[in-house]
Length: 131
Image (tube, rainbow, N blue to C red):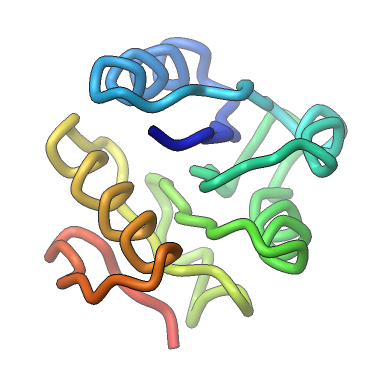
């Protein structure tokens, strides 16, 4: 079980991800639709963050990802606009293109958590790795 933060401003998408994660045994520590809300979780113990790029307050996802990765939180971006992330954000893992399905989401989550715990893992084809 992992504690996962969802940074997503589309409520139905966020709730769908939350349900998928919880059905697979993980815990959603919160849903943040913007930078200000995400910042309220920066002191929380988080095992992984799933971050959209374009949020309620604009293109703040990369900034959130950078701040979370700086404190040791693995970050996967999930966006309909992966080209906006370019070559990636320092310290983050990669990006998945939306819309996505439950299997793709869970494969990326499992990959990130395996890496976090020092296990070798093959990245899923749907996850474009940075670096």
